[in-house]
Length: 443
Ligand SMILES: *Cc1c(COP(=O)(O)O)cnc(C)c1O
Image 1: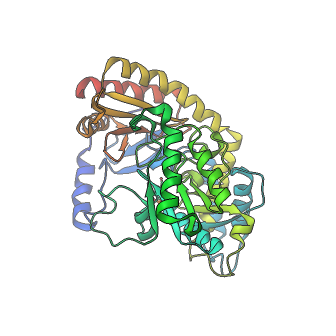
Image 2: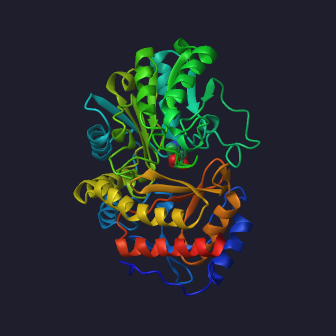
Image 3: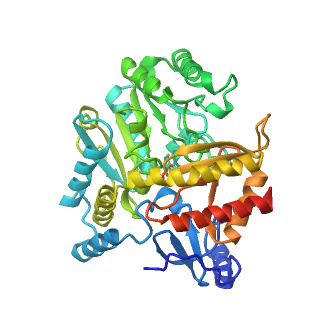
């Protein structure tokens, strides 16, 4: 295992990474961006080592994927064993037990004690696509309601569900029809103040669905329990529950997109747990499999079993190596109580972020839950003017000092933290020291 220590051997990116980046420009589409072009050759725990011998502290987990830690030993052992046994048969041709085990454990850990069924896929987008397919088929309705600031993926249907134009949708239309957008209960930016946010946003939601779609035409409402790419927006408390209860009354399926929030990231198994919401359908991916590509759609047995045989699937969906990896990752979450660890990470981060907010009047809000935390940066606390420039400068300063950080948000002004849950307190504290220095240099 790599020593859990930051090392700056060269400037960042170093010469070897720079040379690789030149090759990238000549071989990889410009459309595929790289936030921090250091090329990684090894990773363990909370450390990424690049080709120049730099060791960077990981505050991103490859976008909430390596929740169980980079190079988790259980994952390595399970994947190695599975590769030696077999790598693929296609579950739709000749099945295997690992797929069943993943479906069984999904039924166990996802919200609600009702009968559930799952189907496995390769990416979060694909899970969301299938959630919409299933909801339309089951309800016989077509409309799908998504929220402002939502992110649900980059395939055609999920681009349509995603809110933000640049970079996700720009000139990639036309998008799928029968998608309707409603305001998000975004407490920090709610016009009449956070205390009114849940009730007013819910009233607007009901009004818009009623007047512009019609309840009887609405198959599903899809919501991220904490919005990810859109800015780590935590819906006003109670909002998600009101929406999901109302959907139940109207025969509309409530889909929780937990692709980013799921699997202990927010200090519970799922972020829906925190709001006491039991979704009809839940999509998962990212943290599910310790870095292997796997996604799932899990839902009410009556809904999931309404689909005709052969209606769901895909060549690679639930690949045995990815399944073995998921079983090892989920085992780690249970045995090592990673939900508890996520809460401990929040307890470590929050006071440090609050101290920063006291010192610099650019932090409009600190928000998130567990090990999914963010600060929203503004140039003016009163008018809440988003400061994407400053966010970018702080991000660059962190990168230069060997801390892998990510930004997000509709306005590009949210700085987010998604550390691996196996990173030790010392490493996380050192990362926070770097962040503090980045504020000193950048504000
Ligand atoms: C990342 C993400 C997706 C898309 O997942 P991919 O695996 O990138 O297709 C969908 N929904 C949410 C909430 C996400 O964070």
